[in-house]
Length: 60
Image 1 (spheres, rainbow, N blue to C red):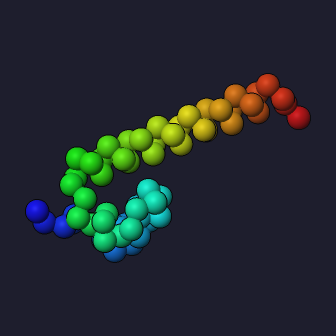
Image 2 (cartoon, rainbow, N blue to C red; image 1 turned 120 degrees about the vertical axis):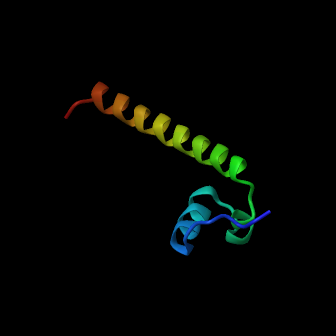
């Protein structure tokens, strides 16, 4: 299996966002990486929606 074809900057950002060592990230199968990215995006969307909901309930 080939390492992922991503830049070093992208790998570093993904490593930090996913909490995975860069070496492990570079050799992670693409379908697993995509699943983790989808989970991360869903979690961010849920937290964003919760923040938006809280700000509409308590206007300044």
